[in-house]
Image (cartoon, rainbow, N blue to C red; front, side, top):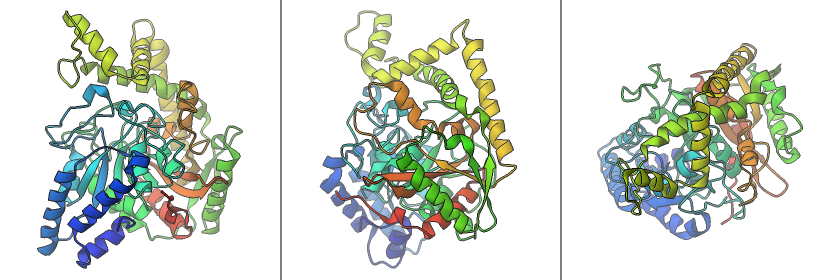
Length: 483
């Protein structure tokens, strides 16, 4: 049962061949069997999930139908769920229990989904390997000596290891697409504002976006249908119409223009990644898509721009964790100032402290204009590059990452090398456009490689359409790791 997609599971539930309780228990049996190897979850919500499954069975018995009714799903551990812990994989929030549901969790519950547990991540979503989690290491199910990517590494690994049907992650600089590529699953970063961020613990508020991680593009479209939409509780939520993303899936891609940015295919890309990506692009050409050369000239500044702006926002967002309002408080202190200092020293990990310091510096008096303001201007130029490119094409195709999944500890002592893991994904967050990662092949060592498809603002339908047609005509997404 743990091998089902959302579509397959729903069909069996609808025909009453299985019950939601049986399906949920099958996933917990799978978790019990492989979780010691993978480490995808920070904690399980077993009791809540079985109650939700029982409720789903009652709704099915009453004749109710819904795309997620009875479907077991995992959510990244920075998305709030009432009466469940939300740790952000940090000592700072290790025992914090949320008093409310995030909007996306409320929508999942309303749709009848069964929430199995919370998945591991880099602390406060800061990292590209999930090695920055203060709670545990997550392993890549395809090679347990390698990282699953980050920061949604637990969500990606849980889908790849078949410890859930689908999951939710969040993407600030590639944190859905990069782990999706490393773990051989499908991941979608929606347009900024498409999905409510209410109840998402903020890292960088102008960049964060919640999105689905699934076994197929069709499942991502189903999940995106449920979680999208305007939310008055989130001031950055866009009040725009939400199409039925599944309607575009079966449409032919013949005649669509596929943009190939020269800046994404330079000498920095690993040949083992470039070969399957180019083969996938050839596959799309064979399906009738017309290749168009495009240029994104300011992409070379994307990593520097991202780390200035993201760290500045992180330093502001994380200032609330002072031992007074949330979570951990140091017991060593004699004065209020010592309590603030010791709490943040003991509660945050090294990468979080590094980014807070960098962000505080670029916002400080005398450096604001030189760094933060200039970073905002560069962000505008990157956004304009995409607007110019999309005048010539319908979607842009590119690699997700310059390398396949790297070994545990390989880059943990070199933050700059770790930051460069996101070089192909960051610009989409700066521009606020949607992006999709689909499995497109494997390296000679059997590691998954992802193809990235980027679309115009609020045009998730086009990238889902192209991604689904690619999956219909390939089998990379059907392969599973041996555990």
